[in-house]
Each structure stands twice: as structure tokens, then as C-alpha cells.
Length: 125
Image 1 (cartoon, rainbow, N blue to C red):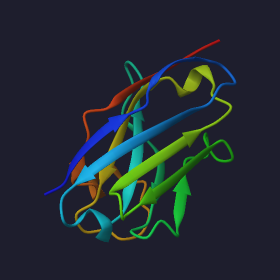
Image 2: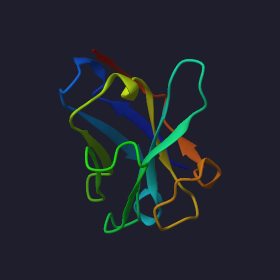
Image 3: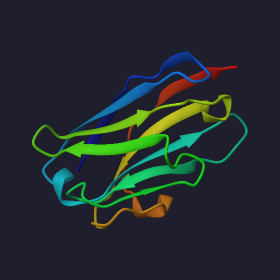
Image 4: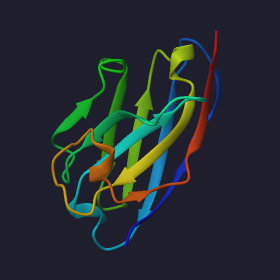
């Protein structure tokens, strides 16, 4: 079992940066992949970024490549999402997710077993 708690969301202007954090608890966290997903009002939850169990391999949605960076600190049971050059289209609730069986970075929602409660990111134009 893994519990996840996100923080760091807020209201920013286009072009600004934000760093999201996700604190994990549970013995298996450091063994499996982690990911960030987001959900805008009226839209489905979509993949943003993922990291392998070690953090050495990462994957990103095309819409955030070059602007967002995912990282993890397994000693501290933390996952981070550095978001630069934010755009209004980045607005949404951001969710941290942890897999219970996949070790490589994955963009598939159904490969993540544990989810945080989400943190709101709002980017104004």
C-alpha cells in the first residue's frame, strides 16, 4: 500500500514556474514507477510525466516536453514536477501516481495503482 500527498499548486501567470511535490508513504514506493497526470475541467485525466523506479528513465507528454521535469528522491520518498514556461493550457488538477508493478516510466493510467488527492494549478494569461 502507498499513500500519496501532493503539494505546491497555486495560481500563477503565463510564463511562470511552479514545482509540485508528492510525499509517499509505503514500503514499495521506491521499487516502481511514478507519474504525474492532470485533469482540466470537463476533460479526461491525461498523462503528463513519468519516471522509472530509479528515476533514471523518464517520459513526457508532447505538450510538456522541454518545459516540465520529473524527478524522484527515493531516500526521502518524494516525487517532484518542475514546471517552467507555464501556459494557460496547463491549468488543471495535478495528480501524483505510483505503480504497484511497473518499473519503467509509463503513460498508461491503468498501470498506476495508487493516487494522491490532487493539487490545483491555475495559469492565467
